[in-house]
Length: 112
Length: 115
Image (tube, rainbow over all chains, first blue to last red; front, side, top):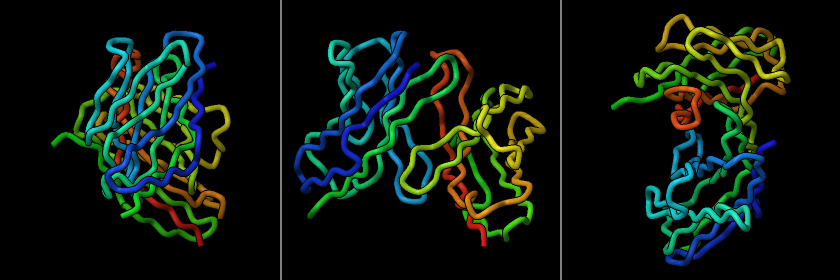
């Protein structure tokens, strides 16, 4: 069965510092992987997705993620955190044809 | 802009009083999903429609029902809300089922409070 594990339920970074959110996946088939962001009282917005093309995926708002098959990882990074990056981030893997399996989420706070 | 719209954004109901949440989409997508998201948790899929075909998740309580009268609209009915049903309810759509087209687009959610 496909699943994802997000390491760290809370991450606190200084404004301007690197943001690194960790996601490891388990999949019996080549995975399709996603990162979503959720701002307070909002729905989920797709940041980026990996669908077996380039292993380094660039998304919106300066985020990128690298698919590493050998490490079964899909970590999300942003070189320089902005106050507006404070939100909850979910990693997800496509399960079969329609279902997404979400990780538990990582809350990011940004310190001024 | 094409989008997924949910109304109302905030809904308050009383214990046991039926409530309906609505979702509409202008993306003309085939698949519509309803998720329940409790505080600090990941979204949990309740059910989805492929066109008019309804698919229930095995652990979705019978208290939750859904209707999709046409491509654009989908409703979530909670027949007898309990305190444990207080949550954010998210509607999402995807173009199709195939993995290459199943990117999900989410609405802003409806936050349900049960008194």
